[in-house]
Amino acid sequence: MTMDDQGINVEHIGFLVEGLGLTPEDARRGTVELAHLAFVRWRKAADDGLRTTRQDYKAGILPVIETADGASVVLEGELPNMLEHGYKYPEGYDMHDTLLRDSTKSIRYGTERDADGNIIRQWKYLHVPFVRSGSVRGASEGTKTMAPLPYGKKRSASVMRKIRAHVKRLEADDKWRNTTSKPGGGSKWGSSVPEALGGDVLQNKVTGAEHSTGAMTGAYRQQKAYAKDTQFQWISFRTISERTRDGGKWRHPGIRPRELRKPVLEYIRTMIPSVMRQRGQ
Image 1: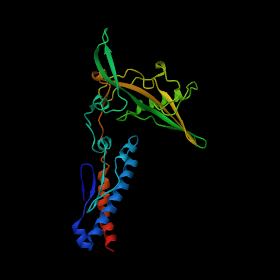
Image 2: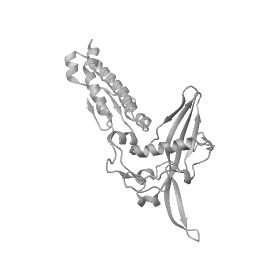
Image 3: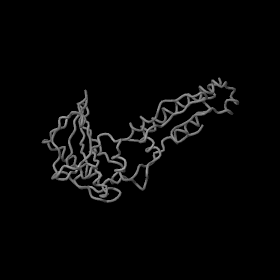
Image 4: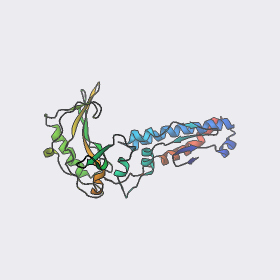
């Protein structure tokens, strides 16, 4: 059994086949069964070990791939592998290099022209959504408030408490008109938080550069109704542009390696004898 750069490969194990008297086909079926165990265990590890990136990571765990002598489970995709192996951690990286790539969806282009209409320069920019806090209101449970969601590396507890307290003050004000449906998808936009009520201005966690506005400035209260519950979240948009590259405000602390496969591999190793023994009965 080996673990390559992208997944878990459960190989044919000759000494177990010989020691248990398994036929090659029984041995192959045993390795396929182990691969399915790895698939389920790996997704469970993602459920237990991740939060906001959980679904993205799980989408990268492909179903079991059977081969002539065994099977494998592969982790596919850039973000899932960044989460698994880590990315530029702890030195960090400039988010302009990742968010403003030509392949990025919803990227826009700004243009500056001279008096004659000739293009002097062009630059890329993108509106990035930030979910600040959320709540679920149900007929039987009342209102359940979720903690503010950090972006990237976790902010300090004191900063999170300030954001949470500020959100509660905004929630207590009935003047906000909710934004219904998903922003960007034919939404009926409500009111946004004015600059005067935007709260504390935060700093970049790596460079210390101060952001331009308060954490909640321009935030919308998004509402989505389901059969039994109504979900709310505060969402704001910040613009990243090639013109702000030298400001130090879009420096990411890097992605810490989660290494969720390692305990899965150890678990599968412990299951080899029992799975193969059952095949030999």
